Length: 104
Image (tube, rainbow, N blue to C red; front, side):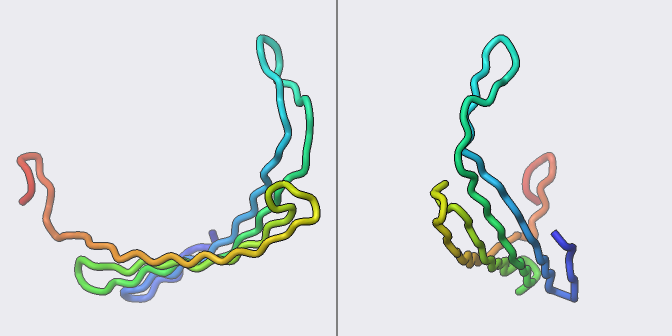
């Protein structure tokens, strides 16, 4: 995450993520954990931005867009995929206050 960019009523959060997923196999028991086999690793590089917009006092629009590059997709050497994620949520936060005796 790079940090937040805040202007009145809007929060923008850019981010980058790198993930390496392995297909290695391991054996474990009473002694140390031992790697018994190794396979191809999948590498995922993602970059995106999240946006939160205050629509009213108790309603927010929360969205995100991201692109992803996958090397060795599904752990198959030579296979590459590009993905796009688009997400939008409408969030309602009622102004009621929760107290020990219930909602006020």
